[in-house]
Length: 285
Image 1 (cartoon, rainbow, N blue to C red):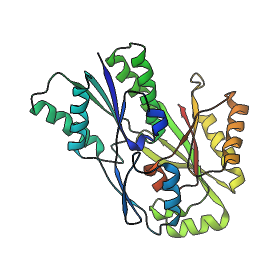
Image 2: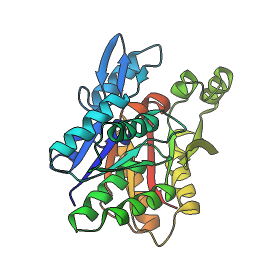
Image 3: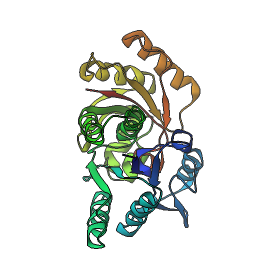
Image 4: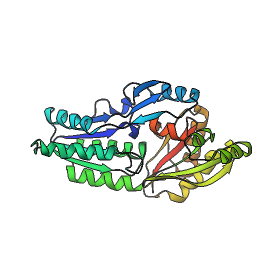
């Protein structure tokens, strides 16, 4: 049994996390400022954050096609893989899940039956499912069966959550997640939403007033939802200053006793909708 993990670029697994591991990224295409980029391959998060700040309009994306997934499956077979675990961004946000499923059906139509492909709708976003891929890779290296690995990934995806906030409502207004008037009034009053991501949705659960209260607000709601038996936590961020990231890490250490937290950068998909001034905490509920 030789296992490959395929995921889309919205998982926010960056090259340093993928290098040397049995992971393949199928990218979406981003059209920003009149140019087309393949997320993960052609542009870094830092480059995209800078571009996003200068654009008057929201960039557009085109999802990976069934043909691109089919090519990835066939290449995996040529490379000697017998099993593929495909983890996809929530089907509530993108049609890439259907592309992956259609490609699997096309394998059967072509008479390829010696490759097992499991496609998982993670019902999640960013590293909330990217991290589960890394967990799957660890399990495979330990010789754990494909069935147990896919079951564990599904279970983790069900419980993975992110509490995040933004330091400006500008990008939520651009993408229609906040009305123009509400965003305008919110900016004047310094209102910052506390958002919950998980189980196929991203929704506001609270709000704080003033940038200085954003991190405390995030930690307060992590306390309410985190499973105390699960030690794992990490920080997910876009173009946020080192001082703010360090402060959040200190708050998490004070409240949960965790140290040296992993820190992951938000890629194009999440940053497009939330904006580059975004920071959050990934944990298991």
